[in-house]
Length: 628
Figure 1 (spheres, rainbow, N blue to C red):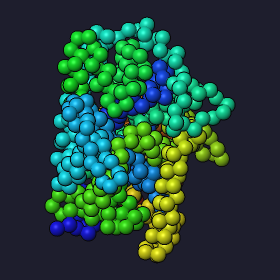
Figure 2: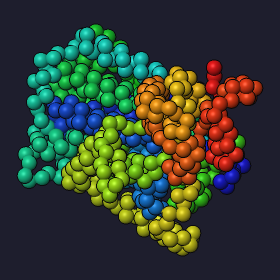
Figure 3: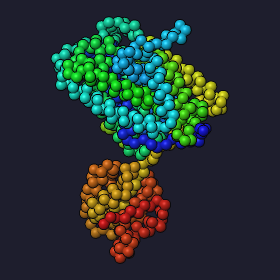
Figure 4: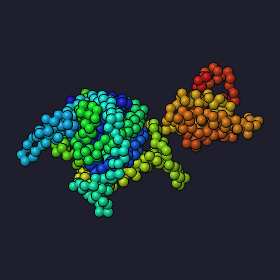
């Protein structure tokens, strides 16, 4: 029995399972993208992979910041809603919805290609439906999709655990391929000689050639857009944010690990391929390029090729599975937010999965696999992903400045700060670089991919039309609305604390109590007050207080706290009144002795004034006891 939206997604995913979803989706890309990219980029495919790796790192860092701050299934669609409105959110969600459907289909098809390498006897398998002939590649891929629908129906825990086990095996085998390749067949001279082949010199039927460039140059740029397919899928980690345990901790760790591991393996594989054989040989093995590469190893080549084929099959299945996880969670999120029919948010009461979304989009993915057209699937795969990544990076930059008080467990750095109209705006440099690079790649896609451009734009136009009709007629809501933003509230907010530090207080005591009592969501202002009525030498007291606070600030900063300090001269009551009412601090923190008895025995003028403040602002005061 299914809930009509009444069930809840279960938090059953740990950090390695989250990493496995990201690496399983992205790490398998090279098993198909290696051949397709070399078909167009030629020997310069290494440069295409290196350029797009920069964009991938920027995308990963963006998800590492946004996903734990806004931990909702839906990823970029949720961030776009928080940034703009319902229409912007739908556009982001609809674009990545296409991406996930193609991920499901493309990598099921890629797995089928390695099945054909592993089991040559299935090559002639075909199914005749009237005038339509379904080849072995499409049929095997369709069977894989059916299996994944069944696995995901019964719970993300089983799906995530399957991913984790397979990815662990995949990392071992991929490392073995790299080590054996470099030791036995790699030639640095061969690699260098092929890097100068900038693009396939032969014309390709699917490329829309620009007259101002040569055939080779057009093909290289086309290959650059295809190379991006090697780095699509890290958003899968964010899609399962509502099912991840401790998302503030595990999501950044999993995402950052993907940002290192994925480009490393992609660049190593492309280097070995170009250092082992002619790029044309890899391009010709379009359906199973890595297995074809490994079969050329002089030592353990045939045996290792079989192992690689098996590994590629399961890694591609993981990637395909991650696409199904992503599309079902995204559709459920859009249904929950009123961007699609609420029917998609039906969560199974027992299994805790959006079963209707899994079956609906799984069937669509099944039909997309049947033609077995890898280049077309790879082309369309890039359209939805690139558009969603542009929206992602824009969302990060805008939200960083629109909601500066949101607590971000991890933040992009370095930061470019711009001052305008008395306000400082932050632009994370990795996000800015990634935005410019992804925008350029997407522009090249629109120029060079005729069929991809037509089908991608058609998908988006149809989606916006259906969305508008759905909102106006069935939901009776405006197309452009911000009311749904209330469903995507941040996980937490930063709070500004003013910590009153007694002049002469030991800086190590201050640092110790704050470090043990607070976490990184608090920004701290250390404040010492020099009262001229009680201090004989005001200037000396000021200098001593500044020295002590600066030392405490350094200690806290080394622990990751955002800390500043200030020494003010004036009436204690007036200064505290101003801090409580006008400074913008959320709370005033007072450090007290370990026991009330000790406080009463050694009560000073400072302590007496503290007690008067407590009675005046009872809801604005936090008392922290010293540890010693």
